[in-house]
Length: 129
Image: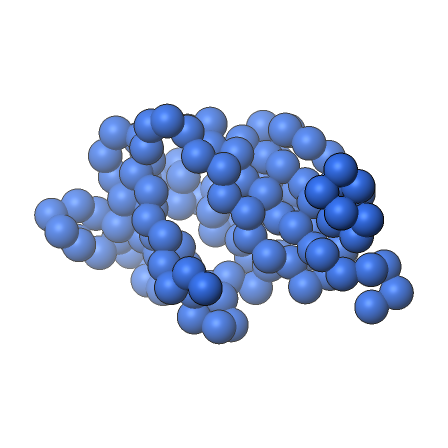
């Protein structure tokens, strides 16, 4: 559905480190090891197996803060995302677990990135899938 998404961050190095670590368990790969100038701004990007791209660009942080959810293939990936994001400096905003208020198999975890954006990993599959 979405081809790419881009947000502004206040510190490209700090946020780059955070997203490198947080997105790795979900299978996202960095597009370049060094920031690339795009539209007059330094930018880092990641892609997944279906080539959905996520970019961060240096600037003032996107306001208001946003909520972005990255799809996980299973619940273990959600758990791994959460722990990797915390280890990379993210702030706990909701431990991994079921969120039945959304639907019976909604399994997600939430972490605030260095700019306070609510970053989530979510799996919609039943446990036995």
